[in-house]
Image (tube, rainbow, N blue to C red; front, side, top):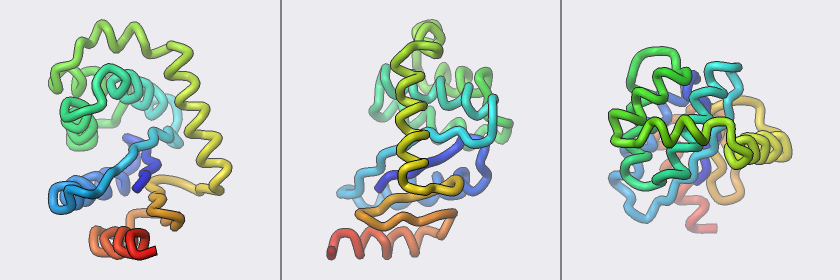
Length: 152
């Protein structure tokens, strides 16, 4: 499953909690996160920190960062993202040195191009197998889409 999300999307916040539960119960589920900052500058800044964090460590520390940034209750921006990264154990200075890197820029462009190519309209959007699902649809509906993809 691929999720296109924005850290400032309220529906993405709900979807993240649902995805966390799905991953906990279905150890065979692989989720690929695509930062697609559709809500402007603060979202882009948070996405830059997220991409740099994933490049530094895409494992459990990243998951902790990702979920914390959605749970913090504040607008996701650079400061909030760096705070979540520090709490998750990242080297913040190392992250900050990568925020404006060509690699982060290329990742943002690649995701935007992919979203455009798929005709995506907003966040969250899920791609499960070959099915594109727009919006927050609930855990049971996601579970059903996963079952369809596995059966297909």
